[in-house]
Length: 348
Image 1 (cartoon, helix red, strand yellow):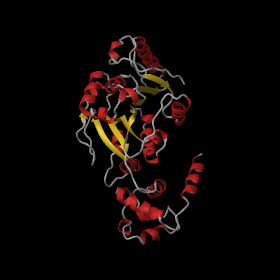
Image 2 (cartoon, one colour):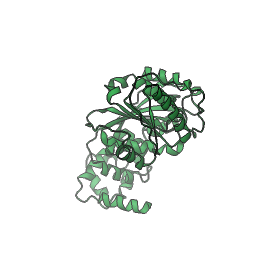
Image 3 (tube, rainbow, N blue to C red):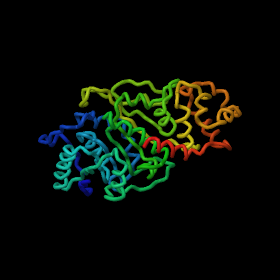
Image 4 (spheres, rainbow, N blue to C red):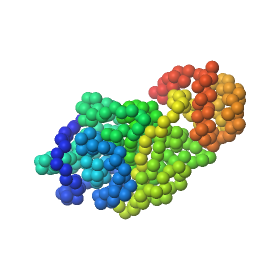
């Protein structure tokens, strides 16, 4: 791993177009903005609240930006927030080499700049090295009662092979692990619009992916290149124009923060895997996969027996929580840790 260190100095906006000799090729299929002024306008119109959310930014704020591609968005966000530290993590060596050239040029002028960290965001070990071994980021641990006010995670997840990271990192909010162990860390990601449709809950056609977001996160659409259908989402999003991006594929920028909950998350994870083993089957049918006696236990609960004949995919978040709470107090509930152990062994 290579780490280019920097210190905070005088501030002057970074403009990628000020380096015309740098060629931004091989962005490996990521969908990125082509014009920095487009991102500047978006930040001013829809993300001005970030400046109030992160007080004393030049003295204590850190930003981790992953899979940035051409650093047009990164440069605009760096200029907008003026953080103490802005780290760009990627495996795109040609891109990192060019970003390093910008950083070195600015450092030679005594100007504040971002820095690069060559590592794979897909690997859990990369973040252990980032914070514990190389100490490229020193992150303050804060209480979960508020959104973290000195650390922001952002990135570009528009490449199909890394889309799964969105769901993994969102679930980390619930489990308080990964970089979410430092508190309720706000995350902002560029994603394909079709992935946004998987995230938005669809009444009557519930998916486990959308359940994770509905149950454990506060999701807001900041910008989108097309209209979307979603309940409880801010419809006042910034309208993007596809001609301003490198790929002719609809794109969205989303913001995620943690939603608090008061049930056993491990039982939630165990139960939803069982209940959604066949989404079109009824809860009663799928309950048979939980453990012998589960159906009878649910039938004894007045707040549950009324929806036992409903297909699992038509359940609401509140109904799922009722099932979780019922399993939590079941005297004969299965050893869910043994179930996870067997599942892990079967997958190896």
